[in-house]
Length: 351
Length: 137
Image (cartoon, rainbow over all chains, first blue to last red; front, top):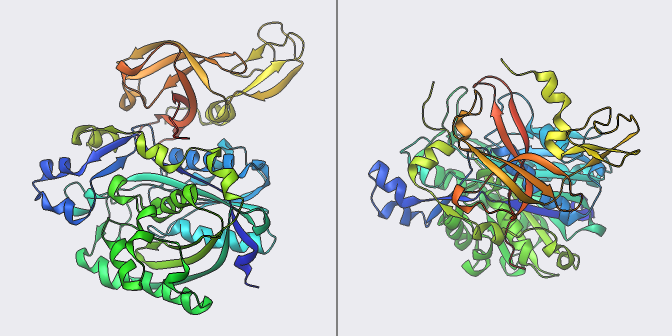
């Protein structure tokens, strides 16, 4: 038996902030062609309010995961927080959330950084910690208020959201990890240097050698490890930096788009970085039926991808309504203009 | 650095989880928590948490905020009555426009940033209240 099979998702939760910036606002301000956002298959992006950050969003997603899991927070032995927009450069975000949810002090807690896949690495770490018996439950959070240089193409999609999962033993799980596989290389497709407020990227270099190569390698690695093939899966969720890449990588791997669309949120909220693929998983779990199999393949620049095979259990049905669903957050929205977005994301220079 | 780190740390549970104390002699709830019941002077207290939905009683809008709070203007200060415990607390409203505020509206607690000690000091987090999220099921 693989270690993953002893573990699964006990509770899940998501969070999307209230505000949406229509991408035509970025076209209006920076003089892009109206065709540019169409090429990204994205209409609006979610924007965190002025009093929100990766910690507050991660807190709400984790609170929702706890409501679904129905466990005593004190039984969580590890809080792993994946982000690339830590409110503090030095001082853990994980401890604020752990304290606010009543998990402290008998727990591990740390922030992880690997561009958009730190939370996915957290998921693999939590599987290992639970499977070994080192902890009873692990809390994995992916949360980002993604930054982008104003006027850069990245600004169209860099958005804010969070997703959280409580990992425990498979006998309590709403979805069991059947297998997982990770593929990483040193590929400089996207980075942010110290003290620099916005990341830079390699334009087209972020595509084939980075996103596509790593996700395809991770998924094919999972197929080789398990003998599974695209037909065996009911859903396929990929990292979603825009609304087109996930559909393209799905086609290249042999998944029809009908299996991708239920977990594809970027067209409506943008790319929420560490929450990007994971909020897609949260939405699929909101709707999934027992026995269905999910492929999850997050990606992070720098670069790496993980592939998971996840099988939904009977317990999913009793927990779906115990917390707000992703669609409830999608439906709660207030359209804002570029000026309010600039204020909320703190990109107006003040002294 | 202008904020007292020790005070923020000492008060974190009442800010993060609405920790309070109930007096076992007069049964009144003290929020923020204290070591002596501010109603009867008893030291016979038990810790409780008030993390629950609330109804809006009254509010006021701050357009000229003090240092550390300026970026969060307009700040909506509210007195809300908690639905289960009936305790009234002073809080802030968030995720709401001024023209959406209605007396008696149902609210829920969320953790948010409250203030910042300049760009280099600590960030203060605390519970605010927002309109209850509408759910489809």
